[in-house]
Image (cartoon, rainbow, N blue to C red; front, side):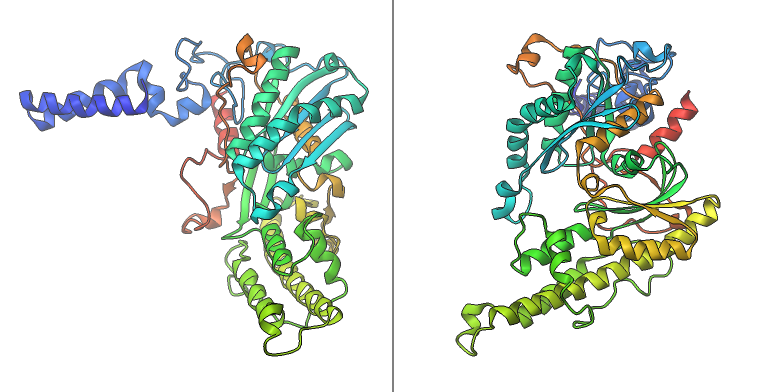
Length: 502
């Protein structure tokens, strides 16, 4: 029964029985049977639903996992995502040369790549949607979904063609199932399941932020757990202590905006060309500016008890500075002579340099404290991994490298082409998860779904935390920007509970 039908049943039963035996007895007799009936338990038990102890919702008629070995599916993308894989007892063996196809559609980039078991990227393709969203001032989910649908098939075909291998040599399909924009995630998951069904290979759900954290291993296999990672992108700002695969402690998160979002906003306010993204163009013109010209305040300097970020105030201060020093030419011409092009470029460079200086100082301040906390918990930690789109900023890399060296750590960053969203990081994360026996069996899809006549229902995780809060935040109020509604249990909680269940 659906959730609404269950609620209606409870209300009607309570009303009818209260006429016969009184309200108290009616409430008791109405609520207790559904709660303690085995077939209804998954509707009320989050633990059993997530970890396969009983059937999840929407799998009526499918095999229950009770008393069976749990196959560790993370972020399952199908109604039967909790079913054990037939190869679980044999080990998650790779077919052929162990090549995984990775598909990424969590936001506005359609990406696909094939990665071999040794980490070699065989083929990779990516298509941006900048031209579609530029006039809107942000990502429009429905437009992004339509663009993914029209591009994904060709992108995957081109990636396979570039790799020089045939489809039959693909051993598994890895796909981002969250976090991200739900309509976009669904496109990638559906396409991945069709390919996996046709090739009879497993599907490996991947956490987008874990893929960013593990991307550094593609270029630097020496980076092993534990390590501290700073994930900075257009949608996230996270400081995480990585203990192992699927096991992360969150040391810091953004209280409002991410740094990548702030870079994009400043670039738009300055009227810069956004075809390459806001971050790269602001970094470029900042090289010619004076970083001390406009003394913006470093955010949260007095907050010594946490490692959280906040860029909303800096973004607002930069906007006010732009309005004051670069007013609208149409309004300015009525009072004063308009600024020359050279003078306008100089002011823009100074504002960009001042913004970037304070933004990086904020990163340094929070990362310095996170390094202290990380070394207390993991004394043998050796690396600070900086990943995400903003990690391609050379000034950010240089400053964080100097900071880490002060603490006796080495900074490791993925190559610039692997910092932004890409299919290779998803494929690699899929490989790592597959070695740990995590994934889903090859889906069996109907002819109607395979032909596209019917659209398969898939489960994605648009809100999916990666780590658990550090013990220092035990009594802290939740960050206002964190949306709890429909938020999935964190990947780390799932990993730890799975180990207990097995």
